[in-house]
Image 1: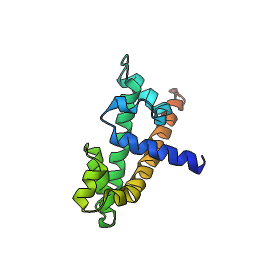
Image 2 (image 1 turned 30 degrees about the vertical axis):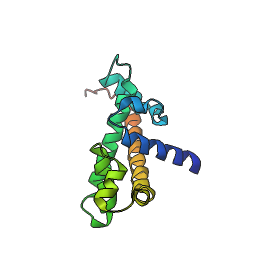
Image 3 (image 1 turned 180 degrees about the vertical axis):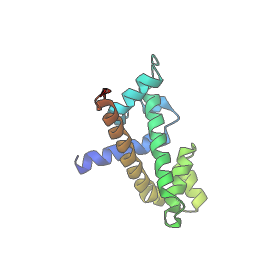
Image 4 (image 1 turned 90 degrees about the vertical axis):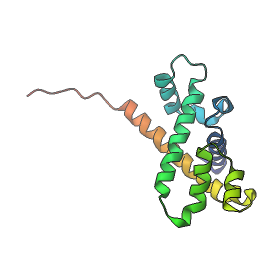
Amino acid sequence: MNKRERERLRLAMAHALLDASRPLALADSPLLQEGAVASIAHEHYPGTVIAEELALGVLVREAGMQVVLRLGDDPRLARERAVLETVLAGGSVRSAARALEISREHLANTAWKTVTAWVLDVFEEICTESRRQVHQPIRRATYG
């Protein structure tokens, strides 16, 4: 994947994180193309018109929560944790910046940019694991 494509997906993740609880806002996301999204949509939202968008919201929130857990309590990552927790709770980058007493522009160009890349990495890990589970051969019992 080239740098331009990676940045396009990072921006898509930023939008998906901000809109995770608004599935209609996710309708044009390139992240919908992941097989794990279709799998979750089929399994948990059969017959629902916006099944893929609902599934994407679930996967994005799950990836975000995994990043929060990985950040732990390290004080060096306080800004990253604060902006991600705020957004996962339905807040905005602006509200996180206000709470941190820094400009929205600064937070958006530093911690938020970093966090969205990390969440995209975890999202891809989740999708890769989902593909592995789907493609595992069925083990047959052997009787000896």
